[in-house]
Amino acid sequence: MKNSWMLIPVLFLFFFQTFHTNAQKKGDPIFQVPLGIASYTFRNHWENGVEETLDIIQSLGFTEFEGGAPAGVSPEDFKQMCAERGISIPSTGTGFEQLEKDPQAVADRVKALGADYVMCAWIPHKVGGFSKADADRAIQVFNQAGKVLKENGITFKYHVHGYEFQPYGDATLLEYLIEKTDSEYVKLQMDVMWTYFGGGNPAELLRKYGDRWVSLHLKDFRKGAPKNLTGLTGPENDVPLGEGELDFVSILKEANRIGIKHMFIEDESENELEALPKSIAYLKSLRY
Image (cartoon, rainbow, N blue to C red; front, side, top):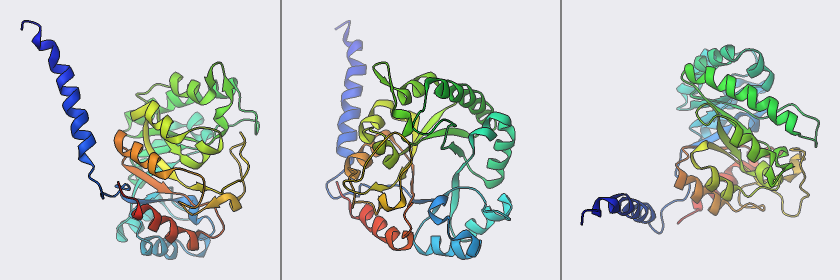
């Protein structure tokens, strides 16, 4: 019995896995986080009135918003407008060049919005030709800026956009970028459609990199539409969630398992007001 203490970690792992497996009961909802929306969805609405657009967002039931203040509105005023409608801003975005030039200015803007996260969604590169040199530049910028942001109480995340799946060695440049960035300073946001568009398997990548992922963008891809490594496709290929090619049941189950707390619908179609209620209804219909 003198070595019985060695069994403790094994037994703990067994009971933890058993508890986790049993934590979800049949009939429980699979979508278990606050309903979030990405600002780009309403790109054609802000010019018609910021408060009017926020009223639409509120009426659809969204309680989390990812994005910045529209042109002409201060971060502080936008934060207040959202709060008056029961909408929080857990996350916002920034351009790569801003991160590279002045990460402290990025941090100041994020704090003015009251956000905890800031994401970058595009690394400069020749379209369709993302290279190791592009990845190396991003690794350096992300590590340096991520450190500054963390010192300001902000989590930086890179938003996977699909062009990073260029082959590299036995893997891809996405995997190279993930493995060469400092996990303390650089987290990840998976756009599930762009990940799929670039040739990745969203559920498998969530599983592989676990807690590096801190949020998702949810959108679906039209059945039969062509895919490539540009990270670009037409709005006609964005369809309501559940009507395209993505396996949201597997994706969301894995996201729940690794503890993702923020998921933002991003509709890039030109029929967002018709599509969003369908997407929301689909998410709410999913059950274990």
